[in-house]
Image 1 (cartoon, rainbow, N blue to C red):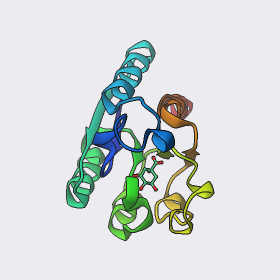
Image 2 (image 1 turned 45 degrees about the vertical axis):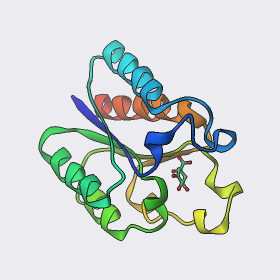
Image 3 (image 1 turned 120 degrees about the vertical axis):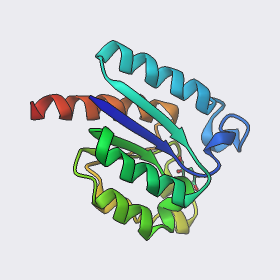
Image 4 (image 1 turned 180 degrees about the vertical axis):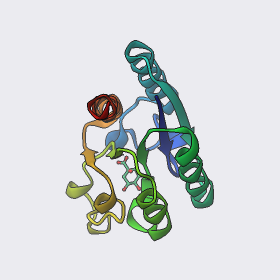
Length: 146
Ligand code: DQA
């Protein structure tokens, strides 16, 4: 199977960006851990990042054709994007929303997610480890369905 991991705006700056909130691990390092896990568990991975809402929506549409599950950290679009939510809603496979920081301990505007109601699982505040956690969950759910 194939799993798409989508990262939203500013996550390309991980490691350099507010490390006290997001940690010092870079996106390339997160990609490496996810790839290692995917190899061990025998699944294909597509690891993507964009600062553009439309690009993220296009990828979610593409996932309908070529992927079985999605893990997404929509960054700030979490709190603003009905369009990303609608695209995810139309994707039938298992979905995880992941945030490095615990958004509920932060500013009020981060407490609401447009995404949470259309995913199966939400992982927040686990830092970079949330990605392999979410990936394991998605691989397990795909295995359950077979
Ligand atoms: C984030 C949380 C969002 O509120 C923020 O806008 C981000 C990163 C996280 O991973 O903790 O860009 O999604």
